[in-house]
Length: 515
Image (cartoon, rainbow, N blue to C red; front, side, top):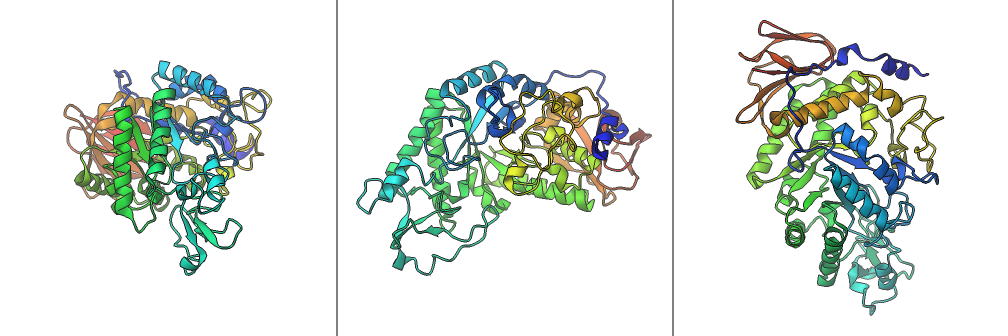
C-alpha cells in the first residue's frame, strides 16, 4: 500500500465529528438547498460485465446514493453519441445503447422516485453532433430543408473571422468556423467542428427543442434538465438574445411541468451569470469552486465567505427567487484532492465549507471517496472504486485508470468500515446539513470581528435557529473569541476546542456552535 492509503486506513484523529445530543430527522431541501450527485454513467457501475457503466448499474446503486444523503442525481449525457463523453448528440429522444434502453431508464426513474431521489439529465441543445441526421441533411446544400437548422456562411463573407476566436473560460479551441469539405460554405461550431451550433434564429429549431423537452418531461418523466453551454445559444455579442431565449424556454417547460428544475452552465463571472436567472432559476456557481481553492491554498479565510456574500446579494438584486448551485469540483475540473495538493486535511475541510455554506451543493461522483484525476478530461472521469479489485464486479473497464487506482484510492467498501474515512466524513456532513435548517436554507452573515487571516467565520440564520461557523484554513494553531452565547458544539473537524468564550483551532480545523 502507498503511504496515502495507509494514512487514510489509519483514520484521522483530527476528523471526529461531534453530533448534537438530539439529532433532528434529515429533511429533503431539494431543489432550493438539497444535495445533487453528479454521475458519469460510463464510469459508475457496470451491471452486465461489458466494461462500460450502464443505467441498470446506477439502479443497483440507488440505495448507495440514498445512504450518502443526496437528494437528486444529475446524469452527464445519456443520449446516443459518437464520443465517449456524449456531449455531441445524434438522437435527442433515445438512450445510448452502451447505457441500456429507454425501458431501463424508466425503471431507474421509478426506483429513484421510490427513494425520493430526483433525476436531472444533461440537455445539450447549443449544438448537436455533426453526425446528427439534421446536420447530415443540412450540409447537402443551400436548398436543403434542414440547411437553416445550423449557422452557415459563405467563405468570402467571413474571411476575417475564419481564423479568429476569442478564448473563453469554457473553450480554448482556435476555430469557430469550419469547412465541411467544399471550401465555399462554412458552418459555425463554437466548440469543435464535430459539434455544429444549432440556429436558434430559426423558429423551427426552437420548436424542435421544446418538443424534445416535452418528450423527456411528459413521456419519460425526468424532473429537470442541466442545460449545457447555456451562454452560447447565440454568439457572445448577443447576450440579450440569450437571456430572452432562456425565459422562453423556461415558460415552455413550466407549461408542461410547473415544478421543472432547470440548472444552467454559464461559465463566467457573476455580472455575466446573473442576467440568466430569470430564465434559468438555478445556475452553477463557478466562482465558488475557484475561490474555495484560492482560500484553502493561500490560507485566506474570509476571501470565499466575502465572495459568496457578494454573489448572493448581487443575485438578489436580479431576482429574489434563485438557486445557487455550488460546486467544489465537476467533470471539467481536475479532481479536488489533486487541486489541494493531496492534503487530506484540506480536502476534508473543503467539503465542510461547501456543506455549511448556503446554496444547493453538487457532489461529483467519487469525491466522497477521494478519487484523483488531472487533465485530459478522460482522467478526471475514471472508474468508481466500489470494492477491492479482486471483488469489484461493478468496476468499469472502458479506460485504464491513471490516477484513481487501488494503490492511490481506498475503495468504498473499505471506507464504509472506517469511521474516519472520506466517505463517512461526507455522509456525516450531508446528514448534518439536512438535519439543521439553518445550514440548508439559512441566510449568510459574515462575522463582524476582525479575526486572523486564516479564519473563515460566518453565521447561518433562520427565524428559529442560528449557527456560528468557524474554519481555520491555516497550518498554525489559532485561538479566537466567540460571539456571546454560542457555546453548544454541534460539529467539529480536527482539533477544535471550545472553552469560556474562546475556541482553539488547529490546522484545517472547523467548529459549529449554537446558542
